[in-house]
Image 1 (cartoon, rainbow, N blue to C red):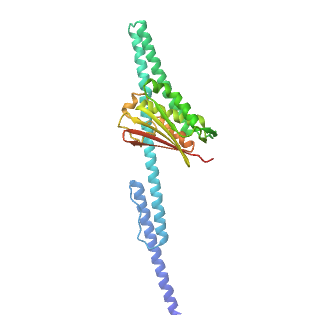
Image 2 (cartoon, rainbow, N blue to C red; image 1 turned 45 degrees about the vertical axis):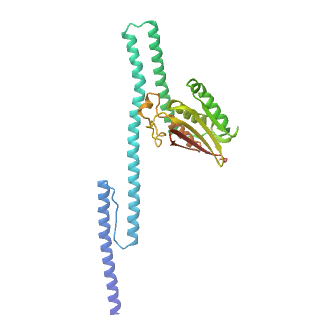
Image 3 (cartoon, rainbow, N blue to C red; image 1 turned 30 degrees about the vertical axis):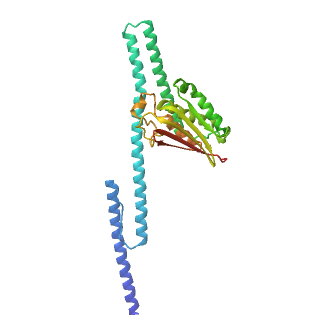
Length: 299
């Protein structure tokens, strides 16, 4: 009987010691977590305690810390992008407006001939038209990224939609002594999609190539398990960052003088992804390649 009492006392002592050290470890972990959160460091919690449950708790807390840090980083990045976006919008809207106001001031304060007045009024009209186009683009992009409605999908002929888009821009390329070379082995490629959205994607890509490239534009369509559409043209300037060209309002300095908001490719990307496709870009020597892929199986 005495032996049993001694064993029970030893067990009780061990349990008391275990609980004491566990409590002390929990207090230490609480302080460590408080320091990590307060000082906003990249540190993680650690423990040498032998309890598996304590180690699992520390592991879970570290995962949550990493998740919170990632979210904070994303929010900070989005805030920076939003600030940059507002700055770009302000710049893009102010440029044609300031120009138009300048020509209005000239008309009011100078003695111009009728010919000069008509010339200045024409310039003012162009600037205000440019301002209207910018505002329309901003509202369209805002609608795209906030619209959660269903997209009407139908069976369409992708080749026919591409040919329609090419014809829309044929005159611009032809007047600049440039060509759009269209290569496809099939006259009809059926796909479930939205014709209006797909046409806008093609229009934006062709218009981007016209404004920001030299020489001819080459368009190739290939089919297999999926459909691939390649847009390839010679780069007009080497400063293009292909990793950013689909970002909202991404521009390089020279592009602003050519009437670019950085929205055309961003809208194309949004539409392609909403239609279940993928869009990417890469440099190939002096050329820019934009690749669209769409699944051909029925949805």
